[in-house]
Image 1 (cartoon, rainbow, N blue to C red):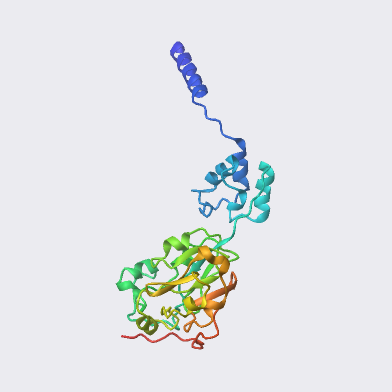
Image 2: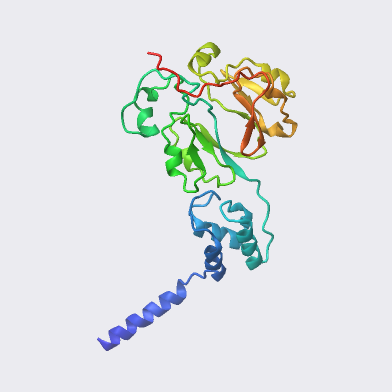
Amino acid sequence: MAVLGVALAALLAFANRKFFVFEDPRIEQVEELLPKSNCGACGMPGCRGFAEKVVTGDVVPAQCTVSSPEQRQNIADLLGVNAGNIEKKVARLACAGGKHVAFTRARYAGLKTCRAAAVVGGGGKECTWGCLGLGDCEVVCEFDALHLDAHGLPVVDADKCSACNDCVEVCPKGLFSLEPVSHRLWIACKNKADGDTAEASCEVACTACGKCVADAPPGLMRLDGQLATVVYELNAWATQGPIERCPTGAIVWFETPNKALKGAAAKKILRQDALPQLH
């Protein structure tokens, strides 16, 4: 038994030496400096994966958008690298149809989640492409960056948003996307109907009238089916001009990441009460 024990110990010692995989101790040090939210905003499966990539030089510390500037600099100082500069991204909602401007066609009385409502006739909203306002996005946001306003519409706090992608994944209507803050021209609608039908369903819907396309620099905007779209590859040309004649205010200009402006021709919405049910 003694001989067998010695033999097994020797075998284990040999295997340990043979198959030993060196791990850079800086990985753990970097991980300790990260917020440990494991949100995936950096594109890695978690903070550990990000730490490994930073140590090998595949990504820069600034790619962790959840970390504070001080945290990123501490990581850069530890590794002796530049912290880098990554443009901030924020979650944007392609809908402005709160209860005061968008009609409902049926009262939904089921489980109070957007995903549950969406499978029951689309959720009861007349504009079947619009936000259902039940707050799934608010629930999943771990950074307190999303809240429903008085009209049941999600509002993103760009200062708190980490671009973690959770709201993008949870929205059953696909209304959220992560956008660089430089994308200041924004279509706050995802209309899938003809113009008359869209406006009869929601007062602030994009009707594909084409005025924005005519007023934009060549190639910056186009009509894609029943919806105006922005060609962000040409965003260097972007101006506030395309919003000015939008009759419904569906196209906005982000003066700051938290402040969206409508054009002069946009209808003024004074109503605060919810619109009545159509049917």
